[in-house]
Amino acid sequence: MYVMVYPKKPALNYRQKTLLDLLEVFGGCLPCLDFQNYLFLYTQEFEKQPSFEFVPYKYGCFSFQSDADKRRMVEIGALVDAEDWCLSKNYVADSFFVDDAFNNLYRKYSALKGDDLLRDIYRRYPYYAIKSEIAASLVSGEELAKIKAAHPQAAEQCFFTIGYEGSSFEGYLNRLIKNNIRTLVDVRRNAFSHKYGFSQKTLSETLAKLDIEYIHIPELGISSAQRQELNIQADYDRLFASYEKNELKENQAALNNLFEIFKNRKRIAITCFEADVHKCHRGRIANVLSQRHDWQYDVRHI
Image (cartoon, rainbow, N blue to C red; front, side, top):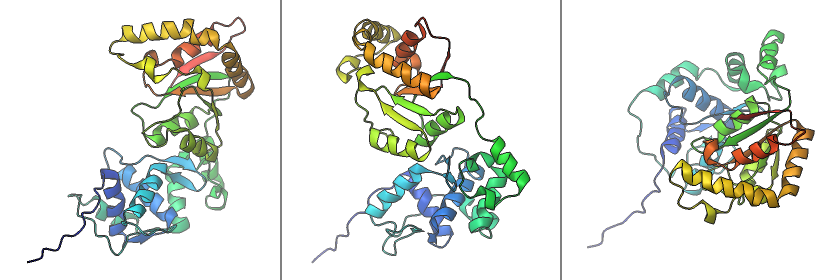
């Protein structure tokens, strides 16, 4: 007697199941812009904890994480390899959600498509239209003024530090955008991360799409070997005291380069992993710079 064994489908995470369920309720296929807009509305109006976050992009709200999940689902055969979002005929997702949120989304918004859908989001969520290349052709003068008013206005020279621990990729990017940061300086020794979006290639390419410059200064980093056995704040303090005394002292050229970048770009942020600046060497970099005789600028940790 022979038993037919079917290959097991790769497991999907919460986000990926959200994407498939959204497609299913809209008939299995959506244009890429409509998909992003429906997903945005779903996260804003039908989820308590958004499964995806968004940034303002060239056509409005956009989730880079959803795009990465799409590539993964194409690989496993759940989606068709195409610009639009379409379920594969050979892949049937198991039901995941027990509530009726997707059906409510469909009933409320399915009549809005294309430009009408974009226009509705631009009007109600103007921040996500601040980088739109087509907003002027879709909304009235008064609505366009609201979009312009949503642009970050801060322009004074300021030095920022930012960590990505515990943050989504889009949440991190929005902190940069909302603080009108023009240049991100990566001060990790090795600009690699297992977390989506934060390795050098993806981070630099994404920032370029958002008109933010990326610069890597590995000389200001700390090697992973030195970061072992950091259990309490005193461990971090000892590490950073040694770092300030040795690495920073030996890398004055890199520090001077960073200061010149700051003077020229006016609003820059240095970045590393830790959320708490007291557990990250970027705090010591900012501290050493602020002790210069010609320093007269604010330092903000975001």
